[in-house]
Image (spheres, rainbow, N blue to C red):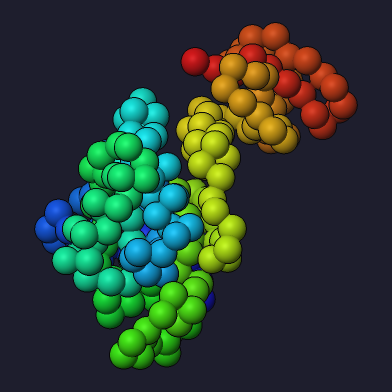
Length: 216
């Protein structure tokens, strides 16, 4: 059975270029985003990790830690970060897991349980290790998405999704294309009377679609 939304993520200890870390300790009281990649020194992934590095201030504003994952070793990660920083013109301060034996890839259901990497492996051998996981302070998976190797991830959308998750933790939902500062949706389980008491004025678009100002 794969890792599903609201499942508690596995509390495994992993090796990174910044030392060993247990995943639950890494998350701590923060939000966390885990970005996985099929191999170091690949073009699309280099631009993606560069984008992650450039967004360091945005992650910090959102009390969010970032953890990279790749199936190569620590030495390769250290060398790869030089390329990442050159492309991004920003420091890559986040740790990258050295998932050589696929422990984390399998624990997060990125690969079949029987998967292995052959000698002389290429990115094609680990192509499905290209996922994003957003984890809450409760150590539960809040969102996941997987991309093919040829399509770079949209980090504006990942930030938007993180904002939406943090907003929904306040007891509301967000509509399509929602951005910070826009109105939010009252969940169907909350009565209009209770919504008014908690959030203020309620706009009824449809009997089942009611909006309020986003709570602070």
